[in-house]
Structures are given as C-alpha cells and as structure tokens.
Amino acid sequence: MRHNRLSILLVSCAALISAAACDISRDPFYTSYMTVVADTASESGSVSISHLVSDDSMKVYPVSYSQTLSGLKDGQRIIGTFTIPSGKISDPLNVEFQSIALLQTDSIRSTPANDLTCNDPVTITAAWHSGGVYGAARYVTAVFNIMQAGLYPHSIFLTEDTAAAVNPDADGYYRLRFLHDAGKDPASYQASGIITYPVTGKYAEPDIRGLKISFNTLSSSKDSTVTVRFGLN
Image 1 (spheres, rainbow, N blue to C red):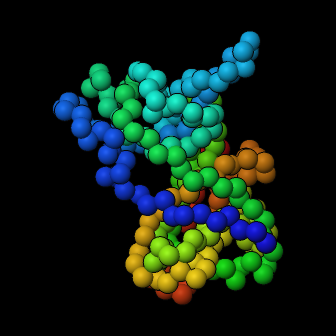
Image 2: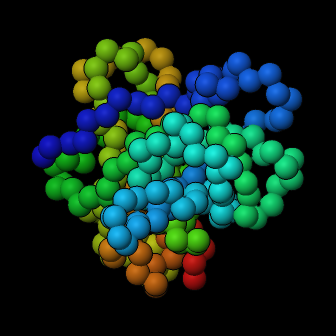
C-alpha cells in the first residue's frame, strides 16, 4: 500500500515568530491553531479569505491582508502568530498576522491488516477536535513525539482499527490506530510533529461522539489510547 510520506513538521515557537523578530512594537504576540474560511465571488469566481476560526471556536478577522495571507484556501489549517491591535481579546477578534505555518493534512483511512506491522513507537501528547462553527470545516489534530535521526522520511497515518469487534463502539466512538513507520531512519533523538485530519463522511454523522485513538508509545511496548470528544452532541 502506498503510504503518505512526510517530513516531520517540528513545532518550534522560534520559527513561528521569526518573521516578527524585527518588529519593535511592544504588543504581545499570540499563537493559535486556526482554519481558513474563504468566500467565493459569484461573478468572477475568485476566492478570498472571509475570516479564520481558532481551535477554541473564536471568529478571527485579519485587520490587513498582507502577503502572509496570500494563497490561503478554504479549509486550510494553519498555526498563526499575531498581535491584537486593540489589546482586548474578544469574539470576534481582529488581529494583525506576523507569520503563519501550514499544518500537514492527511485523511483517515481504512488499512489492510498487514499494514498494522508498521507500528514503530510514537506518543500522542495532545489531540483535539475543532471546527463546525462559523463555517469552519471540522478537524482532528494530533501532536506527537517520535524518535528519529532526520536521515530518511517517516510515515504517519491514522487508520481504522481493524481489530475492533464493533466500530463505532456502543458509546458512539470510532476506534482508530495512529501508526508510525520510521523506515530506515535510526532512533537517535526525540522530535515533535503535528498532523491534522478532516472529520468527514461517516465520522461526521450526528450520532458519532468522537474517536478513540490507540498508539504504540515511546515509553513502553504497550499500546495507549487517547479519546477525542467532538462536543457536538
């Protein structure tokens, strides 16, 4: 099976705010995960940003549309670093973006049993559901740690748990596995990454309460499970 090959996106606050390093203003900087919501003009067919929605469900309006925001598309996921010119946090929120980074996006997939052998250690350190408000698409996002040397690409993918007797379970949770294939890369040092998945199709049905995601942790040979609650029902 063809895997999604990706280079791990290192979560570095220094990198995110580098574009703002020369700003001599004293306004504090904020960093937030967001989803882009775009408008389509009916006459020309051109697309422009309407607003963004933060992962804590706040509507965000850029006070200016600089080159930082050019090329963004509807539904894209970003980490944005910004200032708040008014100095007040409110909903909706007007912000001045200093820098953005696109999040790696993949799809939840069904996986044959033989692919479950790709089970190198990985630890999910945080996972959450976002969107479904103010026109934002729904996503599940995971922050994780792996061991790597950075010499070869790794595979990270989220699959249905083919070992689950019933899926979804009686409580309305789909059981999934978060898999890591280190390939030929030696386990030299710990690195962090982040990846996000659209919540669509059967996962977005109204009776689905969330996801239970299991993974093979770095700290032991036992699997661990994180529960992501959708909070919509």
